[in-house]
Image (cartoon, rainbow, N blue to C red; front, top):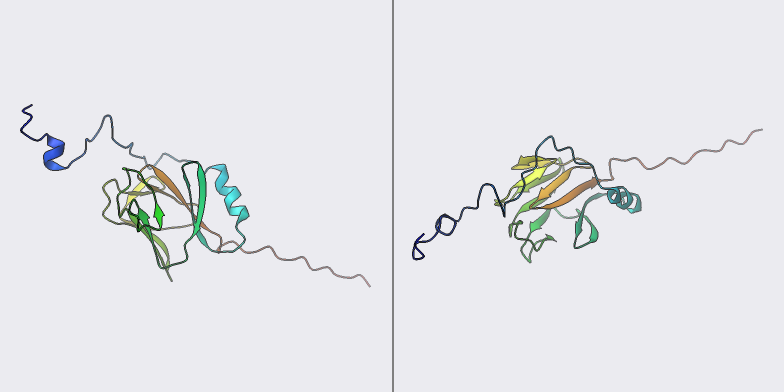
Length: 157
């Protein structure tokens, strides 16, 4: 290869389709199980609501979806930030509206996957796994779970 001529990657900006340095593509039938810590995180939530839970650098993070737009990406402006080359600067948006919570692909290079399926957008339900780059984010909706009803004690007469 002539060093004065740019290589295919340099000239087109494309990434290799397979081999070293590529991301594994999740299969829709992967059937990943939810990590145990997600159940613990859910049990420790004291306020009913919608949350995103993920691991970063060995830390387990749970953030509320409290605004209409939650940005996910590598940018410093992102609400959920991953400093990782597999995540685009503006990778995804979590949109909370009256008809539910959706995830939108924000023109990312590696795509957004929900439960192993690549999506442009998807309505989220409790327990959904969102894959952004090589990071899993779990959507938790505790508003759908009814609080335990206190038992009424009836005094015998």
